[in-house]
Amino acid sequence: MIELREDSLVFRFPEVHEDAVLEVDFQRTLRIPDDNREYPLPPGLGRFPLLHVDDHAERLPQAWSRHGGVFLPMHQAEAMWISFRAGYPMAVKVAAGKINALTGEPWRDELTEEPQDYLVAPEQPWLDGFCVTKGLIRQFVAMPLGEGYSAEEQLTGEAHHGGLQIAASPMTAPRYQKILERQRRLERHLHARRIDALAMQASAEMGLAPGGLMRQEIYRDRHGFDAWERSVRSRCFVHILNSAQFLAATGARPPHEPPTALEYSRAGLPWFDYYGGDLTALEGAKGLAGLDSVAQAAFKKEGTVLPGNEPVAPALVRTLPARTVREGDFDDGPSGLVCGTPLMED
Image (cartoon, rainbow, N blue to C red; front, side, top):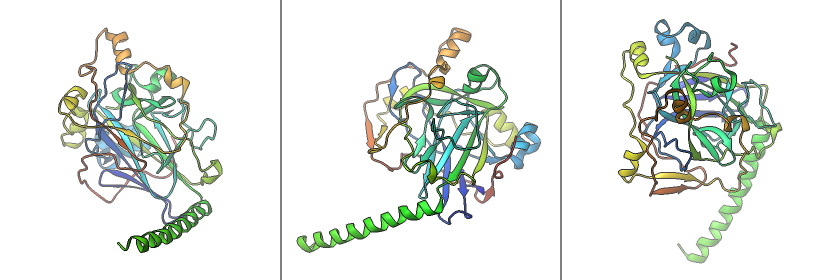
């Protein structure tokens, strides 16, 4: 079951375990300069508003009614990152159109072990783009579908699908129970040590194209492939409208355009690095590494450079320890709307 609550997708698997819940939201952010330099993580600037396709079907493409799901607005060349929050381990697949964002392979409903085509939450708290090589991604950037920018078009030569697909599979209940038992033993042990210490102290449709390079590791599954309940999964389509189309479809104005990376840096605001402890990073996808970035594609097509692409030198970079929440400005939105249905077929 998938619900839309306060601009977040909430995946629930009560048939597996009452704790099996995953929250996914889509964060507005800076578009980092697309100049082949490596940049740290930009901030979250608040959630994109999510709306139910069925509520606006008469003003949306007919195919979207078949896919169901939700939609959000993005300005052309605007960037996003995806946030994952879960206490119960989840295997999450992300596709831009029909292209897996981790492997560059065509979408498959099933999880694949090698190459690993899914990320694991909560160990992976966010995904900012396409996994092009070990420790580096190319940022998710919205561009018009059909003009050759999107990852899907570059890899398949076709522009059939835009937006995103998100699919989640929960950990098996027996494996989760083993994790809980280990945690309880550890907590009892730490509690005993704390007591000892206290005693001693006495105290239109848009597609996603690859943008600039960013330092981010996509972690290898440390639980093992047999940890996942592969017969149970839910999938949601996340469609993308440009700002004008969003206004026409909903009557509501989309969020304002975010600042440029240069404007943000001049204001002295922080960038981020994330430390994942002893987790191992995936190597990245050769197919994705060979894609033209938005800036490269624009120069080939038009001989022009994207506006707002000036290089910056982030002076304030904060290191986030594992599972620390990345800063963002979260606005409340409508709650309780049902989003999509499990395993909807094309």
